[in-house]
Length: 358
Image 1 (cartoon, helix red, strand yellow):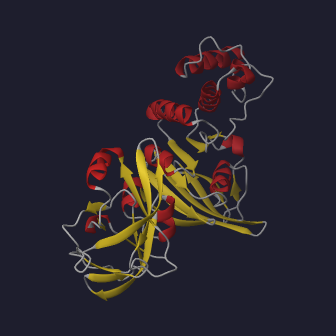
Image 2 (cartoon, one colour; image 1 turned 180 degrees about the vertical axis):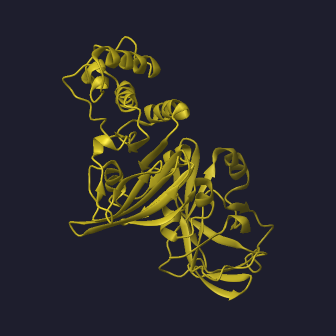
């Protein structure tokens, strides 16, 4: 299965310019609210019509502005799962699943029964949406979508309205249900954890434009751009000045960083994740000779969470307008901090530094 998307659309002062080619079965689209994620999905489904571009799914062209091709949504073979599931409130589960099916009554009935069994809906066929839990509603919406045997399915933030426990449970269920799906599934979300769990390949959108596309794990390890790093959860950034091929000044943090690997020429800033700092306790007063590649910090704020403690720290040599450093400490390090106190420095691991462009 291959997907090739090129979409250009302007409306109400907002421009959408999306391009990616994917070979994976599960593709994620990550972006902030208002970045154009849902509009991109609606364009792929045919609900919205781009001004220009091409949409190709499984070697079938659904839209091509240059050739005047624009296949109707119901003929694209693309299933769409909306945020609120869009079930018909007056219809039963069986009737909702049957909506859109073609064939004889017997064929439709057989297909509905097959979907009810596959999506664990036995005993619920006569109920209406308001009589179902959130998880049951999602399974009905998935069953209705999959009953038509789509070539690709589009999932528009399907977990956004659910509580944390139910969200986790339904994410697991969805991944299990998609194991046997031979086509491509595209998930839109603003949740980095959701995207990381679901997708093999990832597109990051920034204000309507494709920022970066590639393997999900590789993008999280090397987001390439500051905005992409933010969307994947990075909290700490500093502008840099290149001093030589292996040395930079982290301008916002007031330190120099020396590295074994060469400093990329394109980088204008660095990012560092809040969980990756290494605590360093000095022996005596080490302020005159601080350890290499380390921040001398003082605590500004602290937030106690159930499974970690979040520290917000002032870098001591930072420029005044620099923001706080975020250090997120897992619970397994808590006994050491209780015994020894807060560390004097936070060490920066070279392999964890992300060189970024603004």
